[in-house]
Amino acid sequence: MAGKVFFSVSMSLDGHIAPESSPADMQAWRRDETTPGLERWQAQWGRLQSWVLEQRFFRENLHLGAGGAEGRDNAILEATFRRTGASIMGKRMFELGEFGWPEDAPFHTPVYVLTHETREPWPRPGGTTFHFVNDGIESALARARDAAGDRDVRIAGGGDTIRQYLRAGLIDEFSIALAPVLFGSGVRLFDGIDADGLAPEQVHVEPSSPVTHLTYALGSRLPRVAADQQPI
Amino acid sequence: MAGKVFFSVSMSLDGHIAPESSPADMQAWRRDETTPGLERWQAQWGRLQSWVLEQRFFRENLHLGAGGAEGRDNAILEATFRRTGASIMGKRMFELGEFGWPEDAPFHTPVYVLTHETREPWPRPGGTTFHFVNDGIESALARARDAAGDRDVRIAGGGDTIRQYLRAGLIDEFSIALAPVLFGSGVRLFDGIDADGLAPEQVHVEPSSPVTHLTYALGSRLPRVAADQQPI
Image 1 (cartoon, chains in turn green, cyan):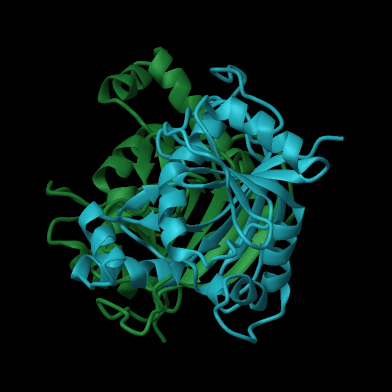
Image 2: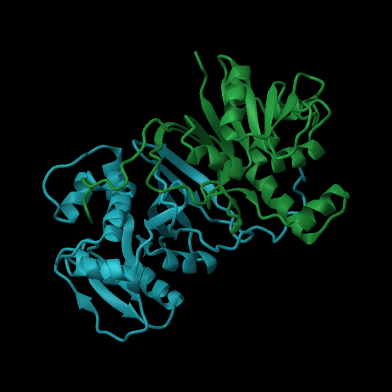
């Protein structure tokens, strides 16, 4: 039996999954420099992800030090990891991660990177192998499904990659950790997503502090205009 | 003891509290005509508000017919009504409502309309009186607080009016009924809200079907850059 295709992200109350970033700030970061733009980016990112940063599972997987919280948030992070048999990500997420992840990248499964480059697979210690896919999102998904077997395929990010899979109708389910922060600008999760095509169904809600975990299924599609709706 | 200042809205998963509307479509609506744009607007609005439309309290208050659901959603709508001692709204919401509300408007309290026009108070059967305020949001709030007494002041909408009060730091609490719909475009609740100023604190979460009721308090403000945040 094939697994599901899902994504799981932290989202701000105003719909962003990452703060606004300028290429110059990101280059400064790689040079280990600080800019006001980068400070702001890091402060916003830290507020969005604060619920993740303190979890034991996350800290161990990223080698951030021993200890950490072990409640429901930790269990949710660990369950998301365990259900994932393969991941798919965009080129930009890979490039940021290549710089930020530890030597043994935190996936421990095959990861398919959408890119225009041709590049040999890149195995990492601990079981992650990055495969570089040049022939489109459906091909990447077919390969990820094969690799995942009974487990699920996670569309890891970023926003543009998630939206490509949403638009193509290839997502079965998604989870949002809705964080009580406002960015004002940044990477919008659902930017430009066809309003009439998708009919998410709320299947699970779990509040924790400070976020709410929301899970939606995407089983059906809407008619272009629902003629039986009441005007108000 | 003075009450709180709050707002309570239904919001789509992509952050909209109303679909995109064109003035031409709205004028067609007033002429009792249909356009494709208006059909789409009504279908989207219907999906956003579907949880409200079937509630007994809402149906009775708007004279939409007898009966209706009487569960938690109905209780939440009624509690929001009962806590409200006065409302504030923008000119555009008033104009749409003036056209759509029944003779005995559904507020049954004083309502302060932000406008540049000078106009005498307009009492309606059933206890609603519309007062037209020309001298700014703080003046409107002072008058609404006086009128509300121990009860709360609701910033009824639309988005622009809510954002003016948010930016001025005058909102104590807000509730969002997060609906599993995507609009793609429309009126964004938090559009352009200063990212660093507001620090909502999640105080209550209650899932129902099909929405999730989320309540946040706005007690504190953030420093411009949180210097103690960890970079990732």
